[in-house]
Length: 238
Length: 238
Image 1 (cartoon, chains in turn cyan, yellow):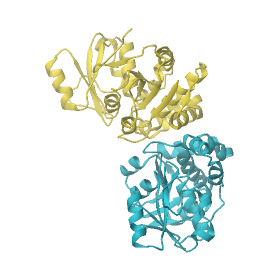
Image 2 (cartoon, chains in turn purple, blue; image 1 turned 135 degrees about the vertical axis):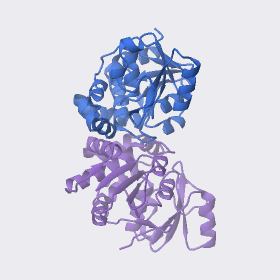
Image 3 (tube, one colour; image 1 turned 90 degrees about the vertical axis):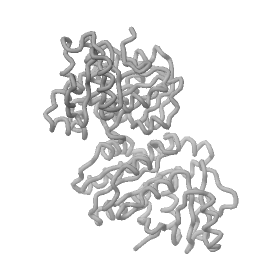
Image 4 (cartoon, chains in turn red, green; image 1 turned 180 degrees about the vertical axis):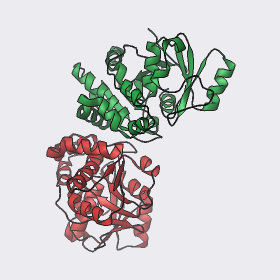
């Protein structure tokens, strides 16, 4: 099984996606938040690129929830931000959520050419890796990055997937990028929360008083859900 | 002093270069080869993007040497390839060399907006770091990458610069990318040659029988020269 990793959506766009399992990661916070939302009973996410598009979709479907952020700040008139703590069961159960975020949405859109597209975070590492093995396809990890540039937390989360699959005894052919991500993960394996607090985006979130969110994003293997992105929607298919 | 790193020329183009010391790295092999050429008395390099452009410049200046490669293969009618072993004193002493390579040239062109642009490799790490400290500017390390994508060897070489400056006691503010590169360097610090042999491009070069070149690219601190890229030419300015 081959495994590759794109640090940014730009890199992802240069890679061959057809026939591969693609894993989209925005560890701080979009893909973590989605995982929490599904744990709490959400029905689906519809990721869209712009705030305007999000408003339009919800205008046409008034039972949908409007969610998202820009630079980690909530948006006017939106039902939900991008904090996992927003997505409580009483708010999201059975709901379809239209979401736009700074980086995660862009990576999702760029990942659409994959044979399967999964949502990854530190929360669902184990269940995600089992699903990847089950699919048997070559893997491409798609980090969301930060405004088109490298960010540490997504890469470390991607490296955790490489490390887990290795520990499961899966024979892996790793590209330089996948191998580098694994080294970075192993470097901070014993203190993922510390890494999340000290990376650039984590420092920014802490500065906004969102340290509790960062803490949630470090809850390794706390969830069994593996959301999939299919035909414009993120859902649980089993 | 702030230090940042771009994994690819695409990333470099998104960053602010003005006022910074930029270090261009193509560890396997272009910037290593340039360093060896200057050690052996070369007068200057003129990096150009295309094979055609290289031929035109040399047609107008018949005393210049024509150098370069595509996918590590020599080019027809060129005086020199991209192997450091080609650049012997009797061939290059006093010569201006017009060079085009797959990745290094693109990074150099993208780096032109820097206040100063230096040529870096494992060979001139120490002298390069002293020069960076002397300049006192913020630093941006520009990895050449491989066809627009991440490659391990340039990033590790960039991380070696971060690590050296830290060891020199220079207070550094590191971006996620610079910090990640330093972690990757520290991981293989004791076996840089092994890393160069096992990374994707190193494996490719070994497969072409160019293992001797890879060995030369790992000769840490073997050179004191710090080539600078200024007004379209790479020269030694002191």
